Amino acid sequence: MYAYPLVTMEMTRRIMTNVAAPEGTRAPMGQFVRLREYPNAKFRDVTAPNADTLYTTAWIDVSQEPWVVSIPDMKGRYFLFPMLDGWTNVFQVPGTRTTGTKAQKYAITGPGWSGTLPAGVTEYKSPTGMVWILGRIYCTGTPDDYKAVHALQDQVSLVPLSSYGKPYKPEAGNADPGIDMKTAVREQVNAMDGAAYFKLFAELLKTNPPATEDAPAVARLAKIGIVPGQSFDAARLEPAIARGIADATKPAQDLIMGWLKAGIAAGDMKLENGWVFSKNVGIYGTSYLQRALVTAIGLGANRPQDAIYPTSEGPDIVKKYTGEKKYVMRFEKGELPPVDGFWSLTMYDAAYFFVDNPLNRYTLSQRNKLKANADGSIDLYIQHESPGKDKESNWLPAPKDQFILMMRLYWPKESPPSILDGSWKIPEVKEVP
Image 1: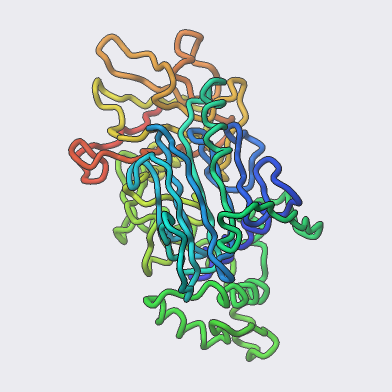
Image 2: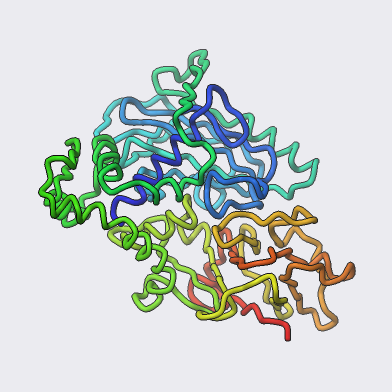
């Protein structure tokens, strides 16, 4: 469970950078992916993708030298560029909420780096050599707004410090034909045998050191031959330990996915009207199960001040949603989600990927022209078949079988009503008789 985020990040990095030049959702190390439209139902690189912002993302290795990222003047548009270390912690998050929308430059430095930076460049220290810049720029999805956001994306730049202020052309990437580019990352990680899993983990520890507070976990790992800075050789283990490692994968996976419910009793997760969410995301400390769960179902999650992600697998803790039934979610007048950024409701299949549908609609949000009822309330219709032409503006298409709902509240309001202090509560999704 402790190793799961670092291994998953590495496997994700391999797939997302395994190209010679930027192409669709992938780009070589040190180069930006600039997604020009929302992901569709074929997208499998990252679980629980969103269809509210255009991603501008890059993977960099700061173990050798810093990298400088330049963000243009966003002219008041909502954006955020969270920076994740190898353990999935958001160690910095420039954006509208934190740094405003004017032009800004940052040097991301690795563990142990010291030196002088150019004038006007702010240092952001990464705890690990691996860094994922997971930029998001809000976009309504109209042709005109796509064009405006594309212009902003094209001004975002990334260069190694040694090339800053000089003409710079990134080198072509090396596409490895041996990397599985079709199977979802989570499936690839879960399919690894214990010995291979910990061998990779040990290699990653060499440039992605554990945090100070991880000392107890590191001491336990040493007992099975995993020591930061050293390679791991399962052949040297006692037979009983080798068998234990081989048998540990499935129980660990079950424990991680089970935390969505078990975390409620532990206090890491909150259950409200059938929705499970947490304010313990983005920065995890020693909450290793929580960190692993978010890695599995929402890799790249933000800090709670930037986003809260209520998730619901069914109308209550026992029942599951299914396209064989119809559901409605009602917001009373004036009680739409209170945010300073934006909100959305997203439909996923049972594996947390988008659902193909005739409207090519994966979300409902404030950018939709939602029809209000006579009393000012708003009903969202969640079902497989159309609720009728007069209600399609409020329809979130579901698959025929099981599905999962996720809300996004970006930059939730801190003063009441607020989901952060519990003064605003997310409405339940009710089955239609």
